[in-house]
Length: 171
Image 1: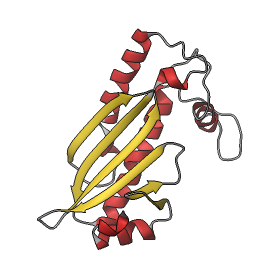
Image 2 (image 1 turned 45 degrees about the vertical axis):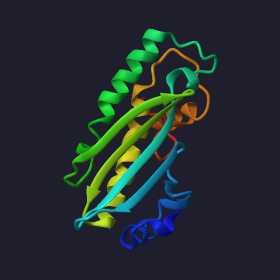
Image 3 (image 1 turned 90 degrees about the vertical axis):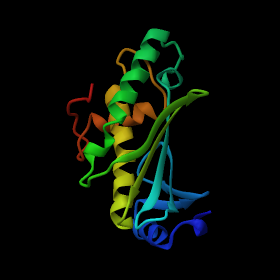
Image 4 (image 1 turned 90 degrees about the horizontal axis):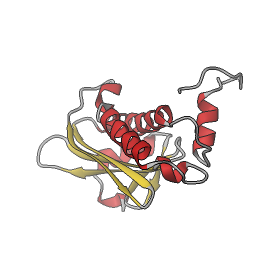
């Protein structure tokens, strides 16, 4: 429930057009992936933020699910190493208090935890983390497989510009 969230964080989420209230926190509305961002009090001047993003495994994204174990394992290892660099994509100095990548039932769950003193900037950082996960995921899709939704839409969007003209792919 967002009522338990610190007032400054709740106000920052409410003021940001890309976030919408969700069970227990806020979700980013500009991504196809399931997201949840929460904030909680801490003893000092800062607020704790937790960003959670769920993406399909490569195997579950493939139409026929026929992705070999070596490909799946290598893809997941590479994804995790690349996602750890998300703080470098922000325009703020952010130290992660926690970073975790787990898989369950065909879903990869990515979690970032950080503390920040300015709620407005922290909400922007949270958005950047989610966008970083989405972009890194798209860049890491292994060619040669037929993918279903949402991967096909993401790849199509990555291969065209804002005028719908075909450009290069991220692959």
